[in-house]
Amino acid sequence: MFDFSAMNIRTLMFFVAVYDAQSFSVVARKEGVSASMISRTMQQFEEAIGQQLFYRNTRSVIPTEAARQLIEHVRAISDELERAKEALQSRATAPSGIVRINAPVFFGQRHIAPALIGLTERYPALQVELTLTDDFVDPHREATDVIFRIGTLTDSAFHARVFGNQHYHLASSPAYLQQHGVPQSPDDIRHHACLIYRGSSGPNRWLLRRGESPWVHYPLSPRLVSNNADALLTAALGGMGLVLFPDWLIGDCLKNGTLVKLLPDFDAAIRTEAQQIAALYPNARHPPLNVRAVIDYYVERFGTPPYWQVK
Image (tube, rainbow, N blue to C red):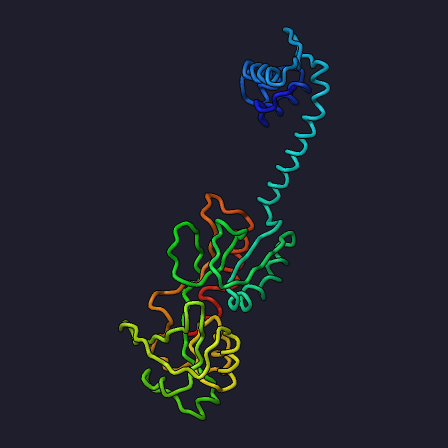
């Protein structure tokens, strides 16, 4: 019975090389080691499998019948290893295979998914799996390569490529303002119809401040509360009331005039901590090429500052 536990890949490669060259010294010169080391490795291999593989004399090393029976099996292993090596080298030069991307639902719908056609045109051998969820995703436990996340970055277990900060804007449609007037101060907000997003932690707070002053929370009596940002945005565009949304969600509306930015002298937010938009991936000494390719692509796609940002 062969004991394969003592084998390793290098031993098998040495066996093939000695079989073909019928010389320890020739293989030793090629591998940059001593002939005695090659001889000792082959002797250990013979002891491991319980068979003599070579007859040795002063002029040559002659394969035995056991070696001739074994060589085809070892060559098959060698060929598989070579194909695996070629596949890895191919991945090292051009992104290929599956890359798993996770992103928040609305951000992913607006800024990740529309750009995928450009990503796959640039890297035709890349296969993308896109998952959109607002749930927390741990890349160390989930089958995810790149996570787009919006929030405060505190976890040192991840590498992060920050695209920019998330900025909020208080806005409404021109039709609403024409009918109900323009708020002149934060205190005026309570007299207007407010459309509030409610997440898993409850309704968003509306915070405002001028310059470096402390954030002030303004209690509201909402006209509409929803966990669907699209529903709230549709209502705001239709003239139903005010919204407080991030620039990546309403930046195009502010730029084309379908929404109007309110209280431009004030900063707005839903949390006091700065919120970053970033791509996360597990700490790794050498991030996979697929991960680097995806992140670099979106860095280029988003631009600096990100294209959705509104002054």
